[in-house]
Length: 398
Image (tube, rainbow, N blue to C red; front, side):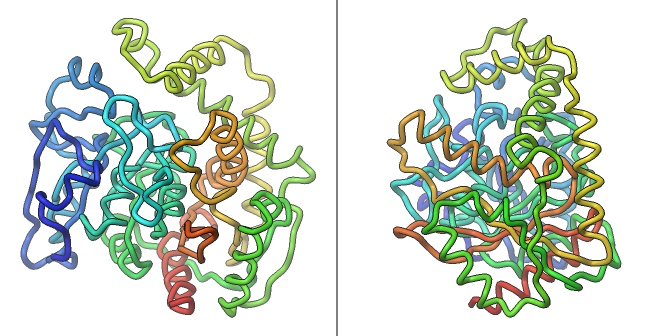
């Protein structure tokens, strides 16, 4: 096992303080000898998930059983080395928890780690775990993976069992994971994902509207990296131009997500009146307000977006996009800077969010000493093939 001992990891602020847990894996499984961490929204029998909020911790009982995703990894030989910090109820892309602090970005310590799976990303990037489980609803694995300079996957929606995982917005929620190299990311997928027989690489699509999102310096580095990959035939496309643009996709996603979030957590919030950090409190207030309004065509747009992406990715096509809108903001960022980063980044993550297709992020260089990343998006159900495709691409960059 290549992970740091607990005494060396305390300064990371990546692991939860309310629980100290270690569950050995089987000695003969395919992941034997590896250590993994799990975001503190995954149940472990006899333990209480904090979910990033002390009032959640105080008002929920210990778990009756361990989440199947965690169990499968332990049975495959991996040792659970700890539970990791999350943004409050997994409702942020920053990774700055008002109550428990900010996990250390493993590539740029003066910058945010990205959320809400910030602790898991930090644990992997800082070598306190070989790989780690997170959840991804709107980008909460892909973005911290990018900002920490590691690999991450959001699988096809429903591909990995979500039982025993705190829900946020169920029709968007996925179990994802992090690793420092794409080969291990794929090995974990062999344990967690259903089999698929997809063949990818017929053509690689570069959506011009997605590539317009990052700042010019980021875009320049990513274009140069994409050229180094030696990918098969590439074609540029206008992804969202006939359906309102990526910003309209993002706004529809946020509306649908907000409604689901309030449906899941509204009753507990109204009853408990938990202490949220200011930004999280504002988001839950907006979720409550949004849930009271009728549908304005967001569900119909979601169906149309799904059809557009399914058609583009038919017959083994892969889409290549920037993972985030910019490098990780400094921890001292202003509210305006935070909003700008969030909106441009969600314009990119919403492609997979709204369609349920898999997306794999790999590191793709640096700008001003901070990581940037590329993402591969494949057809729904092509997760294994996409992980192999990404791993082959990452090897060309090594």
